[in-house]
Image (cartoon, rainbow, N blue to C red; front, side):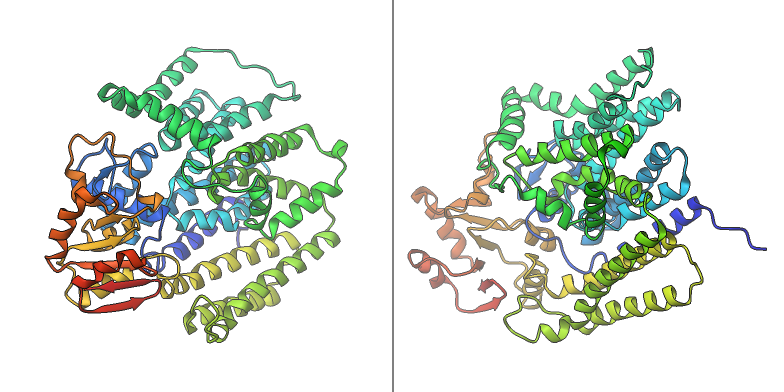
Length: 550
């Protein structure tokens, strides 16, 4: 008689299948503007210049974020090559580690119930927001991994796991601080508060391990900041106000203003269909029937961080990635209270939702014939989506498993794998529409223009620098994205790659460049008062929103 497959084995199978579906075709499209391209290019310049303490973007120092993400990006490029694959491999591994950590947290909260811990891990690994974080390189995938590591470490310590888990907490916290500053405290702090709030948990004694852990946190988390402040005391105000207070309180600081309800809509939308079940069952369940532990998870792991990030004036989708582990665990808790009959209705609804999405992907090549649709789709996307539908139907029809939960989790995994595989050719085919520069770089190489100096009018385009391996000259003409922070530059060499067209004193340098037969990239149309630039060019080619002049 064959031995039953354990929950841990199922977890490793899920991680292997998900990891493989991530890695297949991971580099077929280039880094996309704006965030992913910035991290990719900063990592490339860091690797080339071997300056690990002063990140540079298009040749100018760039201190918007602490350096850990840049270091990891440069490490990926060094290990796997200076390609989009090299940029994305480590964030994918970070997400896979997050899934494993959610499984570990599930074991603690579900009192070693491996089946429920496995369900939480699979649900987390199939959330759209989590998948997006793996394929869109920013600080957020790494930050979520480190926050989860710190949260797991402190909970494991509270559950009498030993002092080594306390060190994991402090190291994770320090690395999170080195990834995104104080915001790295949010989830670990909420986990600590949730553990004690109204649960009458015994307080563990303060020991030398706490002292050593705090010292380790200070060394790891503050080392880079202190080094830069020792170089220039102006960094103290820069980090405290520009990138902490102003980023939180002033929407205009980084041009990321969103309404207060932004996350209240987007967080559920990017965790479909699980969020529908979670919200419905949470509303239907009497609060008095919910154990204090799960009340605390809902309040401190989800609601409080969601309110905190909603109050912030600067908003991007992946900022709220730390709330999704709590959502996955709560989904398992609330669905675990249901009878098989009710759970079966959710199962049918989920299958219908996934089937509709895959069906839409199958029809996308036909729909994209209409020129009004902003994207194109090929038969590969439709074929992969159709194959996923067939596989799901066959497996769920022929599989003799009668329990609803295994069937639901397997269907979720199959849908996610199919979606990942089908999305990549779609991304490759629509790079220009999705703000990638690889087609532009390929055109320059085909026309043997790649050795000429490239001028980019009024746009910050690090993705082109990454694809060509050369920093273009950016021509500033009022675009806020090109208003670089040059106050920390030791000299004026940065002016070679950034020209202020609104400053008459910089016109002679621009004129000298135009006489050398450069390439000019213009997004949209040149303003009437700048049409004189085109006198220096004889040919042009329209590519998406861009026009290439040479």
